[in-house]
Length: 111
Length: 113
Image (cartoon, rainbow over all chains, first blue to last red; front, side, top):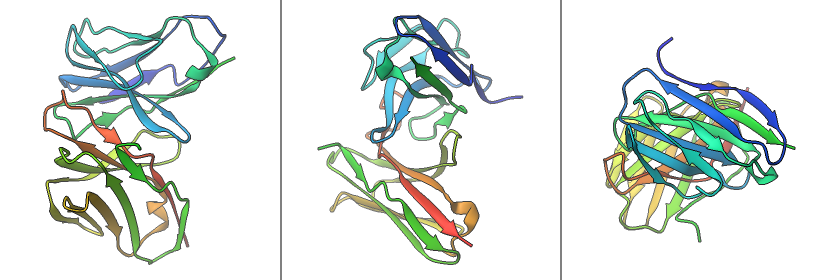
């Protein structure tokens, strides 16, 4: 199906492990974003990308790494997972700033 | 103080009620104002957007922006149980994707049949 997909949908990992969350969109949107959503904090921007090979830090980038070698993919890697990174992660894509299309989310638990 | 403030609720109303959801902000450079709706265990979806000040109506939904007061509102008329969701306000300084959105924390709304 066309749209924006995230995988895995649910992930449990241990402290210190590396984990990669995948995001794929079929619209050829230029902009892609990674957010985390936590109770009491709302949606916070981790990283965003304006095009392939162009990425920028958002509000909470520490502990995360992104890459964008192809327009349609924007993986997010937690290099050494910590319990504070337990969250729901949303990927989004956009042709403009205000109309962002969100994926279904990945629920990550770090034990 | 966060750039965007939004009462988290929860807000519970009877079916058919008029609902008012609000956000305040501190950054006078914001020009684009959005409302996103998020159902439980789903990603947010854009409901409405407004550029600068003024009102915008779409069916049962009306968005208002008062830049002089740094205050935005979303009104839902004839609320339905299907409107039960979390409503997130979001704002941006510019149109380009290089100017990220700043979100409020969201208000959880329950419409009781």
